[in-house]
Image (tube, rainbow, N blue to C red):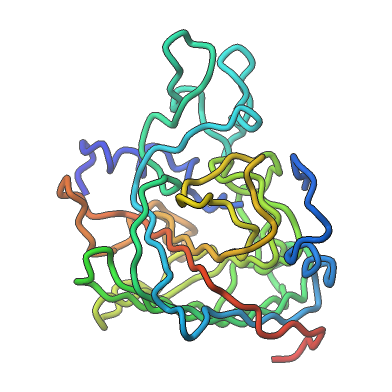
Length: 305
């Protein structure tokens, strides 16, 4: 990566945006009659086993998020006169925000991010099973994950496989709830995870260490993988909404590989070797994949694999 390239700069000088901080108070009420609200009432986090996958007959409804600027929600980031949302590790520094013409409101991030409205449809599928035994961070967490996904690049020339069989049991900038969490709120004003995502009711999430294969060749086995199944956070045009636009009548799954690798000395900044070259000649240094038409096929209180 060229450190002088603007796309490169955002991922190497602004680690606070997409670091391990990828995640309990919700800004607007959730309609108790909605499907996800009913599902979330069935568990309270901990000691559950969940299986989820894309519908077998809808494997093509997968989206690749391209780099782009993120519009800034005043409910999360305030105004230039009264700024909010700049907490270390999860917030957005003032210097990385743009204002409108009269300086009365924030408009977008200054640099590109993984949370844009630049989206393209790809082919792919996923399947995972998680066990949520531990409610709090602990090195000896009993949380478990078995995740696998296949998908293509936007131009269809690169095929990817990602596998995760190990959780990250302790978070750096916020709790990881032992590596797997169920039935809680993250992002936005929650204080858990990047504020560039809206405040989001979450059915299940995990933070893990994954292996990445590109066209059948393993290129990394130490990538941070964050996955979550949440209320819908994109509108009918697939634009990322503000807090007041989150739709809990349906849900979808997000997977993010930030530019973070795990080493024996701890996490380091490292672009994901995606092999996908953007129009400006830069290799996209992260992966943000979204899956529609998903199903939760099993939820039990069985603590065994």
